[in-house]
Image (tube, rainbow, N blue to C red; front, side, top):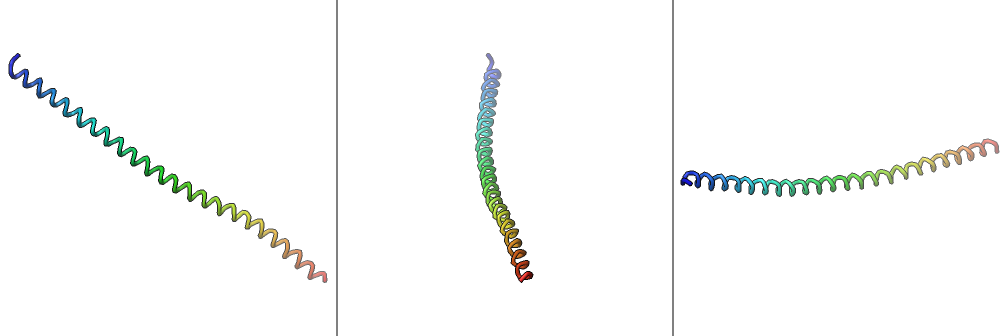
Length: 86
């Protein structure tokens, strides 16, 4: 083999090895970025779930308050009609 062919083969192998290293590092970096993104999304979802749970607690309380108001109105109505008849 001539010296030019040997140099070309060595150069080609070095280029392929360099591209392989670059590709491997990009894959690792992408996995890390994806893990960080997934962690952020999970944190946001947990925060939203907490807000929804808190909101649902208020909704239940308002339902109870609405029932209490209906009872109070009924009591006031009954008291008002008792005093009219007396």
